[in-house]
Image 1 (cartoon, rainbow, N blue to C red):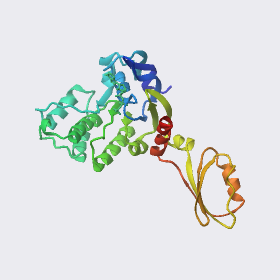
Image 2: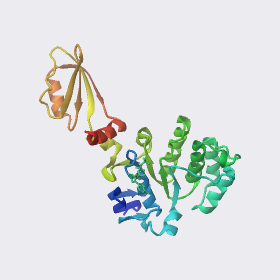
Image 3: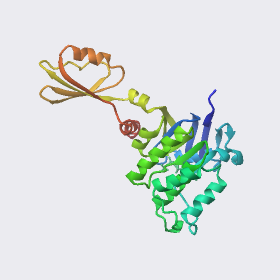
Length: 296
Ligand SMILES: Nc1ncnc2c1ncn2[C@@H]1O[C@H](COP(=O)(O)OP(=O)(O)OP(=O)(O)O)[C@@H](O)[C@H]1O
């Protein structure tokens, strides 16, 4: 049986009359890179605080490698955590902080840490009090990626990073996966999640609305099909799965397709199709579909 790196069962957290997390049940097998998505206030940080034992659930339970999160001393031996707002000791230099974090964490690969310091261009001789937000984030990421912790919990870790550093971040996540580490990544950056995650969970108003691989999410959502034809226009009006037909000009049309493509392909086969282009939706479009529904 596969071990779960993160598991929650009916996890709920209420703050007075505000429900931050409601009846959340997730299972992240060891070795997986799991993206945790949701707009502001969806409950991502609260979930992470519950996982780390920094807040107590109102209902339900959660475990890290089968250790109840309330057993903080045991659970934290397996975890490296990067919070959304990294706070560092202002009078210590970056180098001193990396040594301190390595001394209190679950063991550090110092050779890999030196490589990461170079790759993330961290100014380790400066005092942390003079660091920018992005520099603080980079120190916390280097410390986390260099640990041998089997689970990395990263709460919106790239919000202050520039595109070059974002690229290094993606490489570091891939290397963590290659070493067999599990990653629980809360993020707003959909392209990042699309690039690095095996599976994503989408949170809305504290509830999980979907858990799937990015490929499966794409299959569940609308693709955009563009057809170039000669002669008669294909008749797609009553074809199941076809919506939003748009004429783009002489001999070209576009439509949205959901579900199995066979009915649309059969309708197209009746005319002379010169070119067919199918574009799958990006994670961003899928995400907007979920939240657009709420707005409506
Ligand atoms: N300590 C608290 N006291 C009262 N309400 C809280 C507290 N912490 C969180 N909340 C509320 O719980 C809900 C979920 O907040 P949370 O910070 O978990 O969301 P999030 O998905 O991490 O958002 P963001 O992307 O903005 O960080 C919000 O409505 C928030 O106002």
